[in-house]
Image (cartoon, one colour):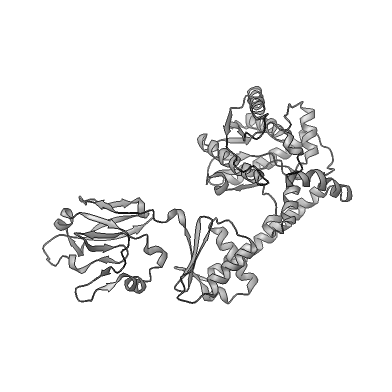
Length: 464
């Protein structure tokens, strides 16, 4: 492990304070700080974090909470939970625990436990209206993370390591919650010295010595040998991470400019993207996904996505599913659709209009507006009508004006340039088994009021 120089407790307190206040200052630039919480396991690292955070919050008069997540993977888990509760009582810090179920018992257990832990932490933070969750990651953890990513063949973002502070809405399921790591520049040895000086009581997790887990094997077998050859390598990797983050910022600036140049109001223009060289094309594509909080796929899958989306025929119906998103192409443009916002409509929805300005249709992720106008259905007729919302029926036709012929819906959609992925999310409203209205297209001419003295209502569809 790293052979960082020893430092006294006051120095670690100063480092912790400076780092945490930097995070708080960044966060409170837009809103005042309310509450902090720590992820507390009872181990040495989080015990140091509890001590430092408690001292700081007492002086700063900031409410602090401590959360223990019981994975149930060790026979000692309940004892550790009881230890954490006792320590929080001694420190006068409100304590909460949450049990989670870890299903994967194989090599992926670390990843599964991590995901369940952070989701539980996110839920606890939301319950207590916590704005910043503190974790006890230190410089040796940073070195582990960077080496793990290096051996996996990761790119710049993986080699940049952990940030001092970031948000992780997909991991925490809490969009506005920030994770801060105020001990990231301190070494494990320095935390050990602090714990010894303050006589902190800690638990010891036996799984941390099990070298069947990749991270443990790296920490126990590989990193000591690296430290023997390259003393203080953890501190050097901190500098490498800083260089990587600088490079990422420059690449993101370039990608943002390319994305602006390759886009119009309707989407990302395929032909403009194709005019970039391959490196800038892939840089733009990664940035586009990340800007929508999409988890990046592997390099090979990213190449395959680009190939399908950028080099398909103009009339090809491309749909690529990735995570909770659908990537598609229509009318020479790329689109990214969040599947959680897609229609959940099945069967029929029966409606009666009683004079409302709008009717929400959550199944279709939108709402119907009813507006007085000159080209619509007679108000009395609409009040008496039984409206039935159905899914799209093959062969259905619509006539949008009395002086025009009826056309199939596909032709209407193509003329209106409505992408195919939007068509299944539209309301198809029937009256007396006749197609009356289609969202984004309009009312069939057979229902249009022709009497100038009769109040008329126009229908409009507004997607969420």
